[in-house]
Length: 111
Length: 112
Figure 1: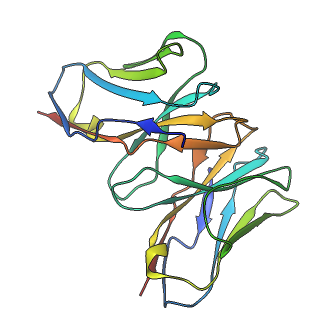
Figure 2: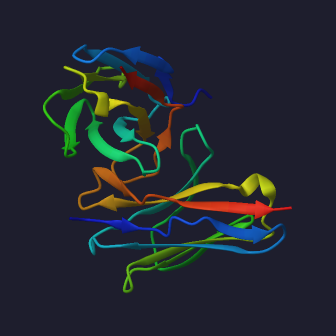
């Protein structure tokens, strides 16, 4: 059973702090990794994609990938209350026909 | 540019009925995937279509079926609805296989 694991949280950080969200996956052949943000009652919104080992930065967001450890993370710098949402980690499955999602980590940014 | 559009946004059905959900992908995207999301869980993969052919199917019963049309829009059909089918149904559009996927606003299905 291929799985993506995330801590459900909630992860609570003060405004302006760095939020660190983590994800592990079981399928060693996965090649594509994604972070989505989902506000309550809304659909997931793509934040970042990462395909190679290392870091990828986009504004306040940095995705980190370590394929040897089967680990992907998302850092959010200068966290804002508007960042409060559930963050979903998604990993492509095998031949890439589908994504396997984690259950999501709920992030709360307190003013 | 128009994003992924799904219809309807909300739907209430009775057990045993049939439902059809519709999705129009982003212009130029040839891949459409369907996911089911129940409260507190991540989306679960149902189907993927690429170039009008089924390329993947998740662990869902045969009551679930889908198709993709020549214009790349897609339908998800669910027969003999059960209470447990109540969920948010999401359509995702991608330019290709394994690439970034963009979700529509979803269809909230309630089975009573």
